[in-house]
Length: 60
Image (cartoon, rainbow, N blue to C red; front, side, top):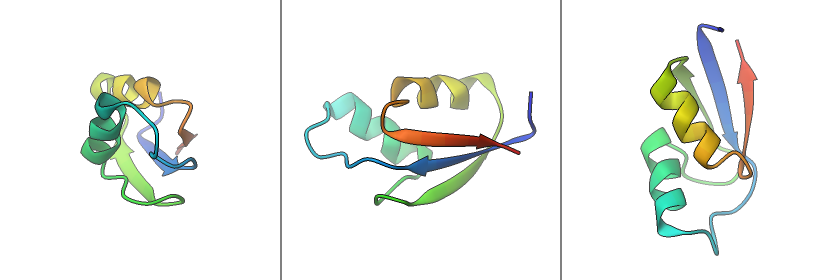
């Protein structure tokens, strides 16, 4: 596994379920094209998997 994950919100949260919005907020994603960097662990990967259709991920 990589040490870091770079997560970018690529689609809008408008029309998504409240749980998906909460997951994006928990990851620190605020606006479209906002990028955050997280340590690569199981919890972050699970959160990214929950909103995988809204984000792009780059392993660093």
